[in-house]
Length: 347
Image (cartoon, rainbow, N blue to C red; front, side):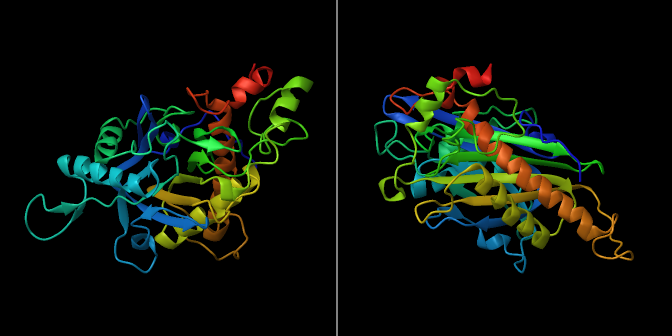
């Protein structure tokens, strides 16, 4: 398998996907919401690995359960309080007629909006300042199919990653078959994304970065090791999307393998104080071969095609996690950004 991950890529490179951010900063605020819209419906799966998750509607995504399609994924700050943001996403979807039909009444629909949260309570100064349903509604209304912003925006506004400003990152790739695979990560990790021996991200292969100077390397080394998890509450959450036509079970596998990418980029990961959660979406634009006549591992077989998607999903999620930290700029009264400490790396 030979393909290149584009760290400047977007989740919206997958047909049928739109992304919107809404956040608030200043006057005690530093939090926000990011919404991934798939108003035409997308098959979905989820995998939760962290020991302290905050999630909504994840049981619906189990392969054996009835609902086959979701209409949005809500990623937000605010810890468990922030789950209220999904109510606003539902309201927006209902207003445009996107949802699961229930009954014979015209317009009787229930939008399916799974979600996950990061812990950013009080990082702007006011513990009670957290996303509400209005955040979700505004993020959904802002969703577009053009490339989304990366860095300290949306759900990543109040994020912190290994003592650095965290944020939202994305990456994508197009396979030889034409299938698009892309990832969006909200990185708010207890672990670090930076290798203290080099000053570069652990997972930097997809990024064009210069080696930091000796003084820059010392600056990031001072943040190692990361604060013990008991002293901080975190979580990395995100979405991997593909244009391939996949089942719920296959989407669940994509979500699970995407955690491999998270583990490559963040060390340590999946602590008892993280709520690490990845959703996977299939918009079904490209059908995969159903042929297994040549064996499970033969080129052209469906398992081989899915395996290629799994590899791409892990690579894209790793690149998206790194992109979140190197794209972020520091916020008032927040931690330094990687850009602050190692400016020459990004020139």
